[in-house]
Length: 338
Image (cartoon, helix red, strand yellow):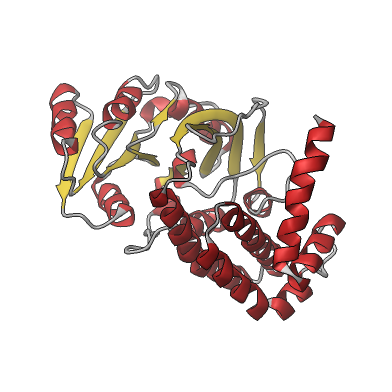
């Protein structure tokens, strides 16, 4: 174990904010209460039209370590890039302005990096709001090689998961100095996290809930539209990830990324049917049919569980029939087990 020297390390946290006047104070209060110092907080107001900008300015006047940047609206990716360009830290973290963090988050993450000589620290998060999942973190800490970290990222560990989101991580500035968020698109975290993990020689994973993520999974018209848009935005990034891994010569990881991608398509299909999003479900059915031969090839791999092979076989034969089977299972089998 390396001796900690974190008193000399500056951590910069990039906060993106757009029309979140009801939530921003909670976020900035949680950062102001961090147990770690020195901490630089850079708040990027992405052209807000409510009171977000004035809240930013109020906190900048109150705290000497908060810097505010007001910019024309360009989306979260552009705002993050702006924040990183202005950051002075040795380590970089990201926070969405409608979320908040635990007081010890950056102290725990930085200590983990310095003690293990890791270039990335990743933690788990709590979902706050309607439909949020309850989690029970173990408190364990894992030191991971690049391939081990990617296995967790791709969902191939039965116990632990490295999430897509950049805000559940702390990055060594030297590692990400050449990385940029893809501007003008959403779901940009998919490739940013993929690039970072494959560049890192070591990652440390903390099974601790240090980040609080505000969600809203209600069935409102707005949320339905957001879910459909998210699905459409994600597909090019998942495909880019697969091609990128093949390009690195990481064939096994690329195959596993393909499996995860196709399994995600089926999960989206079930979700869209449950939400009665008929147009999106039809679009997904078309994509699944177009990818049918490749899906069959990917699902022949030994790492694919037998149950998933059976489910995918049924989904390829008749997506609507697969949905009806899942509905019956949820209605009759799950209650019997409770």
